[in-house]
Image (cartoon, rainbow, N blue to C red; front, top):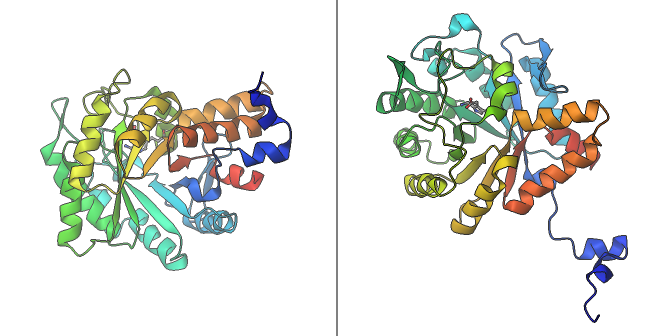
Length: 321
Ligand code: PBG
């Protein structure tokens, strides 16, 4: 044998030399759930270790994570039922606690990058990402709401808008609205290939945002489809997206790789709530070594081609480093 691959694995020093992929805190985006009450803190039952936080706690959490090297956060609002309506009007009410809080976060930590989510579900009494009429999710009418939502979020000083709604044409529509109003430097990280997945369950528990009837299959992608992601990505690139996201991550590593191979835009992946819950549950029972499977999971997502990863493991991973 003149070729012995094991020679490159013989010591930690040699293994480090030939290591192809490394995950660092620079790659991570930490999703956070915001409560209206400033001093409240409530754990998400299906996501042990993840808390819904009032603003006072969130400011402290961002500071602690920033000190660990995490630079970017995706903030989602927990909206009480009495604020929800058919048209999701609170999503663009500048006095609403979420928008006020974003402003305060950016004032306190101007160097930290803040991302926001654009979709109607947390604000909608129907629990859908768009306007519901006779059981149908209206596309073009929804764009108007999304545009107002994106504009209101941009006005708080945030850095990245994340349209997660999967309406057709929304990236271009939002880009236009932002540019026309002087927010040409606000980035768009499009949920390009967002699948109608059962892995979002714990997130919907956290926000209490599950659809009141029906499912999201008429707008989110069919998990059976890979090539369709290319249609979505072509459109997002044409419409001006700065980042292309694949979601979920683990069951869709092939889609991450497909987009990485076909586009020059940065590719991101959302390691979603259900993926986090699985590792936590097995770790708590002693069935898996949580720290090691967490690190291996993030590594696999990066190896598949993700330039950045949205993950609930972000803080624990940073602490592990
Ligand atoms: C809102 C949104 C969802 C997630 C991110 N933004 C839920 C959904 O589309 O039903 C899921 C995130 C996760 O599961 O961690 N449209």
